[in-house]
Image (cartoon, rainbow, N blue to C red; front, side):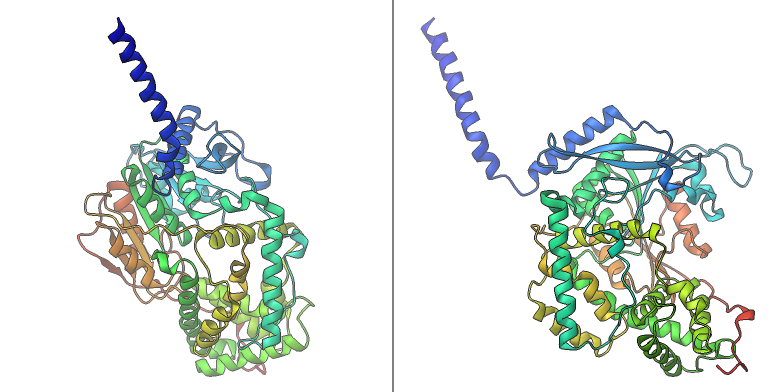
Length: 535
């Protein structure tokens, strides 16, 4: 009897000791352990609740064929029973029909897409099934998009009043004065302060690691045992983090226009590399315009085209077109041409028309957007800033930014300082910074993954695809040689699309890295000629 009592007393003491020791033990656990437990709990809850798909929010303007629902995620994964967010998810069910008339197609579950940003919404992705290049994929997969945390309508984040977001016209000095730098630094500091004041303590929880955890909860809510995912641009970084955090949950992954995932490059170094790459891409644009001088009359060499651009910028600095288009708006609209080849004819037409005395095409392309667009643009900008600033350490001394970008602008003036002004709030950010995850997978840890990249992509320089290829064992890189459009999947390149379909439909990747010839260059519109009209 006494022995039994002693045994029970001893057991009780051991239990008490373990309870006392538990907090101390948890204090010594590795970083991210609490978040991992919270993610697992949130995923179990989501798997039980599933998604009740119904009508999409009217504000999204999606057709009835696309259905929407919500997934509940913790604001802070370390405290999964605390404040929660509702993420909006959209879906178009697989058609199950072979578009070539081959009968029924077996379903392969959900293909989840993130379009990048950070700050972009993927709610429109299910509409891709209407595009011919996507019809075979839409036959086999439910096409699923979502608005990430902070992106409307998923608990939208805001840093300023929307009516203050579109400011113009603006100068865009390639080599700004010290006074102008001080002005922009003050604006960036004010924006960072406003973000902190408007979002409060929640601001710290908008970052890429939480975005990857949200993706795991969405997978569970969809009822998918493993995730089939495609990410574009920043979406590739999100996919990389997911692969590092949840390798056993990966079924297939496509990385389209891969971002460099090296922790030491996130995000300050990534933006420096991007600025240098945009100078090369701007040269591509100018060469194309010069080859079509008979149409646009902007010069038959890249140097002459640059001269035409600078004349327009100087004239816009003196008198903004329509009262809204100054040099910064001109630069911004030609930055779009650095992203997408399809923009080249339209941008060249607008510049040509402006220099011939007709500012309307430039106003239409570069002018201030309507007030109803301001809220969405402000929201996207707030999420972009919060995620990038929260994700990693940034230089907090403006002299570092000034030194690095003054040096870079000597050879890459087109985008360098605009990129600085976009990201400079991170120098004054008030929320704690994350430490970027160093993702490296061993052979067999992941199934084969597919990386797609354009060799002259400026927004996601090609070195990022090469780095990701080195880090993900078993990944295969397909390169669109000599091309530079940002985002190559499901576009006009049949070779790229064949690799994409083979992988997503059959799980096949090339035996080794592969190349595709570039897509055809855009053609100028014949009715936009400027030759002989005093251009």
